[in-house]
Image 1 (cartoon, rainbow, N blue to C red):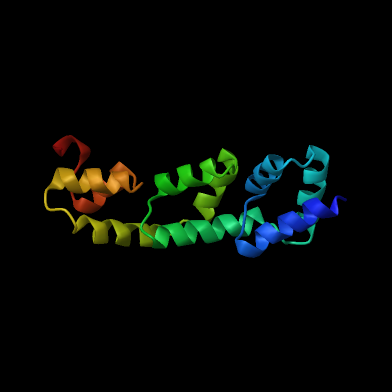
Image 2: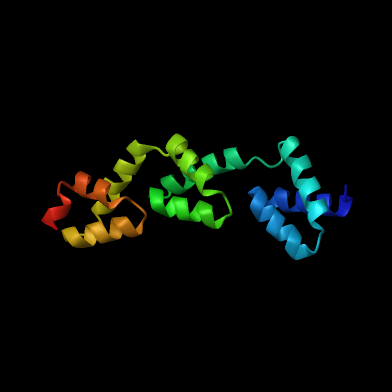
Amino acid sequence: MNLDCLNFTLKLLTRRDYFSKELKMKLIEKGYSPNDIDEVIIYLTKEKFIDDESLVERKINYLQNKGWGEFKIYHYLIQKGISKEFVNNSLKNYLDNELEIKNIIKYSKKKKEFEKKVRYLTSKGYRESLVLKILGKKEDEI
């Protein structure tokens, strides 16, 4: 195993958690060979230094508490290099629907006009059908 690659990866991981795909991209940019990168990623995953599943769970909880809706979280995780299937399964398992409803109610108070509320909430990543249901209007009433 390339110890320089391992040490650089561990140095990155001391600063913050990374998804394995993010680490691979950083290591490629640094100029390490694909074989060294794969070997280090596999080793660190076995040793639990990298755990995409727990990181996805923590990110979903953090972003949802920050006021992000399901779609915005979905696109954020896809952008980080997580597979669509894994993101969809994680959202089903870890997304707190009650918190999502509370957030919609909380953020709906920031705007006065109904259309502006809907637009604002959907821009935060909430499903339009859920927003309309919570705000008491049907889609055909808009």
